[in-house]
Length: 234
Image 1: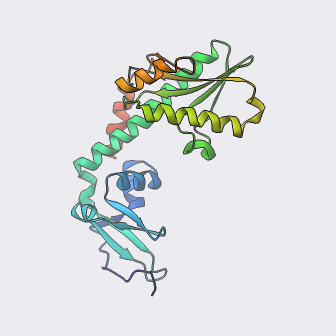
Image 2 (image 1 turned 90 degrees about the vertical axis):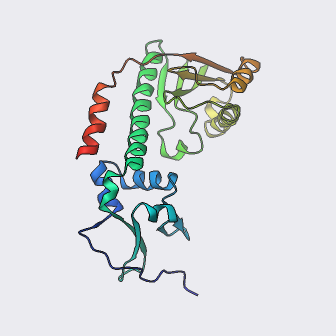
Image 3 (image 1 turned 135 degrees about the vertical axis):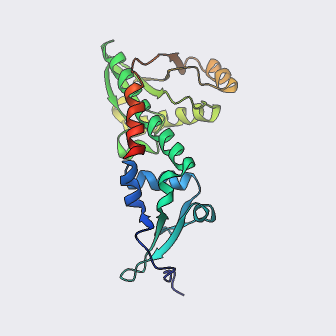
């Protein structure tokens, strides 16, 4: 039996828009919007091929459409979604977190560069992004290498995250055998203290391996608020 969907409804493009059009409205990438909608539980992948709307998504204006020429399923959204407060809030929070963390990451990179470290981004490399997401920056000076995680989004740092960071250090050694004889330390740079009590105790038990410091960024959020406001008004 074919897994291809049958046509579900006719699109009235005066009332409904595509995800691409919706993403353009919010000035973000369609793939980013799909990820946000997936995290919200409004859409999901079916057979790893096409997007479908969940019941929650349908409650918020989603409808599925199957193109005659390809028989692939697409999710369209009623234009009222542009004013959906929950979606607006989630997009704003996501965009803010991404921008603020990127700014903080650059600030920490400069901080270590001024201490005569050679510093490069690691997590932004696409092939490392998911597997080694805790390694934000790599700082090298002489025979010392620091694997740095920058945290400026106020999300709690758990024991599991610390253990994952340690495993990712082991993967880093495998992927970069030139550093196998170097002393690789793990370090958290945080704009505030975000460790849970259990994580703090774990870090204290492994303080020869995991260190942390609180470093405030120096960027103003005024322009960021303006940008997010413009995204909503556009």
